[in-house]
Image (cartoon, rainbow, N blue to C red; front, side, top):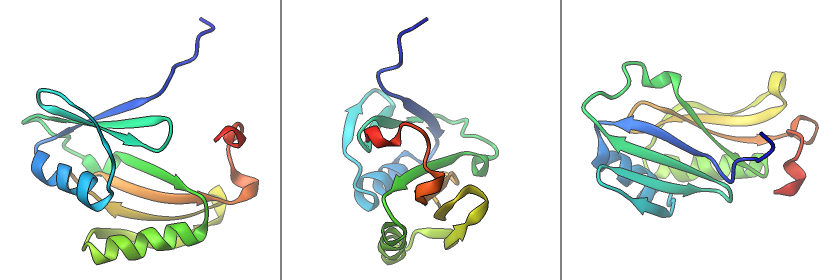
Length: 133
């Protein structure tokens, strides 16, 4: 197969739709791309989407799910940290350098218990193809 995907959508289960919507729409200010029966899909950056579908069977170990947002710089990671602190979002790890992966990052916990990472790659750690974005 030679065709490449057009864009990714990551779907996650939630049994806290009201809190999830408030977190992603109000706190993170992600645009709502599509609302379906029991699912909402948010535009995340230029080329991706995250969908949350309401179910009684949310994951038993949600902390194993990590949703990562890549920003341009350490300053952006710190700006997000300050913003999310004002919104009383739970912090798992404050901004720090992670030399092993050549990144600067911080971790938060969303209403479902999923980890939300906000990270900036150092120039030498950026993935191939990042120049396109």
